[in-house]
Amino acid sequence: MTGKIIKGIAGFYYVHDRHGRVYACKAKGVFRKRGIKPLVGDDVEFTILDEADSEGNIEEILPRRNELIRPASANIDQALVVFAVTEPAPNLNLLDRFLVMMDQQQVPAAICFNKMDLGQEQDQKCYEEIYKNSGSRVYFISTYDGRGIGEIRKLLEGKTTILAGSSGVGKSSLTNLLQPKAEMETGQISKKIQRGKHTTRHAELFCVEGDTYLMDTPGFSSLHLGELKARELKYHFPEFSSYEAECRFGDDCVHVGEPECGVKKAVRESRISQSRYDNYRLLYEELKEKRRY
Image 1 (spheres, rainbow, N blue to C red):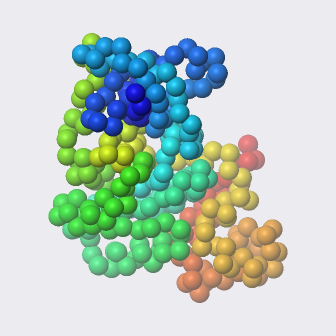
Image 2: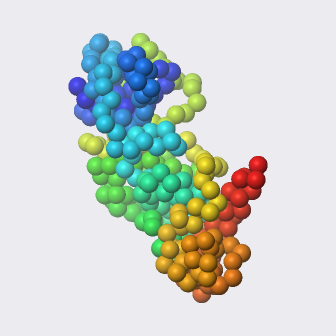
Image 3: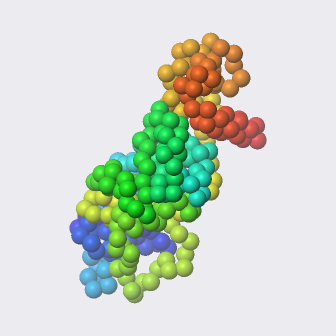
């Protein structure tokens, strides 16, 4: 049989068979010999050892479309980062960090602002203006009154999506709207094994329907940009590229202290968001400082 790994805890991999059933599986030792570790999101071939207790063995890991380092996962199509328009106010530095992190790993990202029932029309206009040229689609929803949820369903359909966001922004409410079964498929995890009840939360996939999966990730409060070099950061801000031809130092310009910089000029003329540029500067200085140590 074939299925998808939706969770891995303490040496067990929980495989969804795409028909609403989950099997607790062990991976064959041959994977260790090959230096391959099964990942959440892997498509696998598995055999059933005990139908009653939903136990099995993973026989083969099928070819991966991609493999992410953060969070450790495979076959991810896109990311959806959720913030609230208010209560709490969005931390745009954290949002921009996440967009850079996903762009590093070549994963398209969409931005979702929740709690529009509490927000104002100017909030929507403000965030649309900031992110209109960021390379990410922007959605405005309310899990309270349901506005915009249909658009999110269309975005997710047939794809495996990382769902990320800070605590208190309505991420769980969105997940519950998209997948109403509170126990998800994970409620079928083998009663005999009983793993994971009191462990730290791990990245986990939920099947919304058919081939539509959501990867729930723990709420984040900080993100590190790994081994990204300060000089490479500009390539992860797509709106800069249109103005770099106007920089006196061309590709050597990092758009911070140089004179006659096309990007800084575009910021002054409000063609690039001041918020995005300010966050770029903060991230640039952070990466530059890190390099010194």
